[in-house]
Image (cartoon, rainbow, N blue to C red):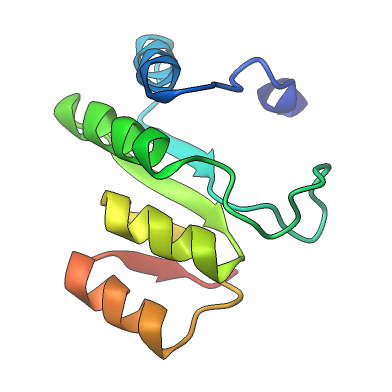
Length: 116
C-alpha cells in the first residue's frame, strides 16, 4: 500500500494532470483520488491550503469523467473543498472545514461528503 505514496504521481500543470489520470486508469484505477488540500499528517508546508490550481482540478475531473471514472478528493481546508466542488469532483473525503457555504456547493454539484 505504501507504494501508492511514493510521489511518483505528483503532477504539474493541467496537461500533466491529464497524463497522470490517464496513466492511473491504464494501470487499472477504478476511481481517481487526489489530495485537494493537506491535512493533519501532511508532509507539506501548504498545510490545509489548496494543492492543485483550479485548471488542474478541472483537467483531472474532465479526464476521469471522460474515461468513465469518478474522482474523490482528500480535503480538509475550505478553499480546497470549494475549488474541488466547483471543478466537478464527485466526493470529498474528510471535509473538516465544511460550512454552510460548502454544504450549498455539495448540493449544487450533487457531490458526496465522506466525513471520516
